[in-house]
Structure formats: C-alpha cells, structure tokens
Image (tube, rainbow, N blue to C red; front, side):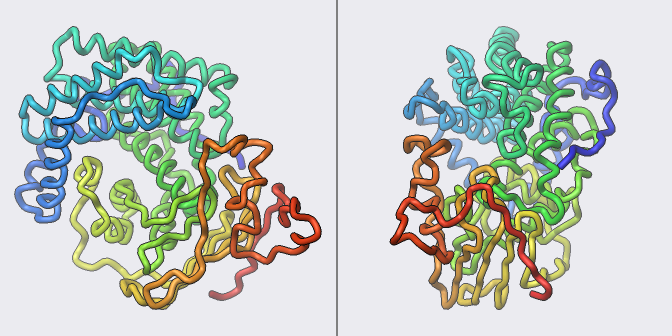
Length: 454
C-alpha cells in the first residue's frame, strides 16, 4: 500500500508556523485555562480529577525511576513510567500552579536525563522517553530554571533526537522501524516528533529535520487503517499504535497549527470503531494476535471523537476512563443525542467481523471472528478463529499472546508455541496426530471473508 501525498513544505520551512513560547504540546495556555473552567462545571471531569490527584499523591511518595532492563532487552517499562508520571504531575501543575507537582516531575525528568542512554537498540524505549521528556520540558517550562531546561534539552538531543535522526536518515540497524508498516512506526515517529516540537525553537536545525522525517515516515503505517479503521495487529496494538498516532497529530496541531494532511488519511476517521466492536458484553475483547484479553481504555477515543465528529467514540470511553491526564485533556461533553450504532460491523483488510444481539446488555449474545493475513505483524496462525459470549460468560475464548521473552518468540521458533499455532485457536486443525509439527496454516497465508449480509 503506497503512502498518500502530503501537504508539506520543504524541510527548511516545516517549522515556519511554530507557536512561540510554552506550553504548546497537546494544550496551549488557553487550552489549560479552558480546562480549568470546565472542571468547575463538569461532574465527569471533577470525578476524574480526583482520581488524577490521588495518583499524583501516590507518585509523590514513590522513588524516581531507575535505569532498569530486567529482561536484558527493554527499558520500555521505565520509559512508560516516566511518561505517565510526567503526564500526571504536569497536568496537576498546569491546573493548580502548585510547585510540589513540578518539583516531583523535575526529579523524574532529571533521573531520566542522567541515564547513559534511552536504549536505542529497542527504539520504542527511546521514542517513548523522548515524548516524556519533551512533554515535561514544555509543560513545566516556567517552573524550571535555565540550568534545568538545559539539562533536559541536552539529554533529549543526545539520547533521543540525534539517534532518531540517524534512524530516519539510514533506516539501518536500530532504525529498521523507519520502513515498518506497523505500530513501531507510529510510536517511534510520534515520540520523536513530540520531543522535537518541544525544543524546536532552541534546536531548530535538528528538530526541523526530525519533524519533517517523522511526518513523511508515519504514513507507511497509517494507510493500514483503511478502509474501515481496524488494525491487523489486534486490539491491544490498535491502542498502542493509535495512542502515539494521536499524540503526533495533536502535538502538530497545537505546536504548528496543522498536521500536513496526516489526519485525512483514509481509515483514520473510522479507527474509533475498532475498540467498540472488539469489546464483548462480558467485559472481554476479541483479543486476536498478540493481545491480552480485556476492554480497551483508550483516551485517544476522545480526540478521535472530536476530530471526526463521532460522539459514539467518546460515549464508549467515558465509563471506561481511569481519569488519566489525556482523558482530561481530550474529553468534551457529549451532545444531547448520540446516534445508536449498528449491532454488526465488518472491517475489511483486517477481515474481522463483530455481531451482537444488543448494546449495553451484559447478558447479550456476541460473536466476533476473523480471517486476515498470517504475515501481519504480531499475527497468530488463527485464520477463521472466533470468540463467543452469551449469558454473561465467554464460552469460546482466545488465549492471546505468550511471553515475549520466550526463545525466538519473534523468530524461527514462533510457530512452535501452542498459543500462536492454529491448534491454540478456535479453528479446525487437521493432521496433527500424523504430524505433530504441522502448523495447519501457512504463515504466509492470507484470507478474505466473503460477507454478503450480516
């Protein structure tokens, strides 16, 4: 699938509309002021804010993050912890002006800045930390000293943006993801772009190239939302990929006032339908591919609802919200009437179908099944598999992903693991007694559904 033409100026002009000053990532000073006003009037926001404040109080008592790679490969848990803490503490600071939140956020950011690197060999770690430090730098800018800003800026350049630019320019080694058409592309491009926009006025040469390259790299993955908004890596990776897609798009809008046509790529306007239709009445989703079972809690649904005028996306997310910073930032009250959605939906290309008896009934009948493409990233050999809910129970289930640290889980032994083979799914398997090493499905196989009427 080819990438669409973008409405971008030359690299030298990509930052021409950069908003001066801070904050400019995800929310401007006016946006924060508007959120404060809505907090006084909206009971939903007030409930979420209480949860956010409780989380902030907990963070105040916890030690700062450390450089830890427990599995020998990933710093990712640390990168995500820093990001989540910065979002929580930064939001509390912007809404209250209380220095205690900024001081604790600075300690978290200073610890990350002192790390020897952000683990570029597993570049998701580097990208997520770049987003965390970029957001922290931007949101806390007026609470930081000149020396503190310099510390964060230098770490972001050294550990994030310079390694990222090398990836964009060569696409080799740690930068293989530049050619990827799956979640790594969105996460790495999005995280780097957010970091670059935070310091673009102070490091213009480096940042304009990072932003330009990110904008031109990410469509390789975004085109795979077409035509119906599904994601062939499964609902869990829909959330991961879409969360960084929305961070990228929103940061471009708030910092530059435009996203160069990225949000107009076909399929993105329908992306919010996937978590809704993958969710069963039992509170379990259709966890195909390397996914864990459980309903998705996805703040990006609020952003998608506003951008594409789909209030049903927000209606789905409201009861699931944990009161995260991004929930507060992206939520808007629902209109008086939200049109009911059809009970059934077919997602082409991903080849997933969802059917149910009723909405908002935990006893309802629900079935979801798929064909798809065994070559897709994170796929299992599960063409034809299904899940089935009725009477408040899941009767046919998917086992989901296995331990990523198993030997060659993403390599030559992938199809040796039961959960990933056809026999570990709800599909007919033939010839296993005669040939126990037979997977029953070709890892290269793809299959479309023939759906005439649902």
